[in-house]
Image (cartoon, rainbow, N blue to C red; front, side, top):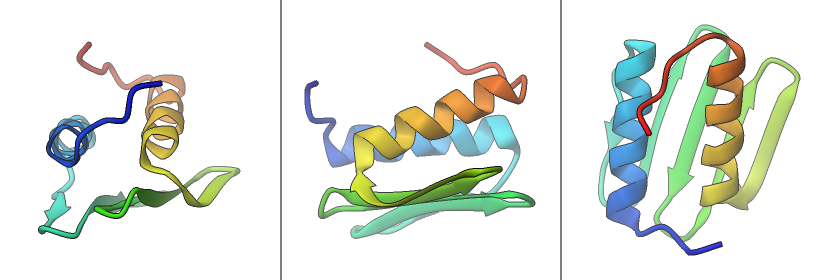
Length: 82
């Protein structure tokens, strides 16, 4: 799996926030979003976490966290851009 750049990660999180209609927090070190029943946080250093439903990933690689969070969103019926 190719490592996603920090810029690409932030763009993906912004798209997820738009799909969930929540405000995305983004600064040079951390980006993330949260709402009722979900939380996603990624760090520039390469580790992130998310909590949704029964899934809780802590200090996992950012790419894995995003992949699992997007899987949860699809399972909840959200349509994600390719």
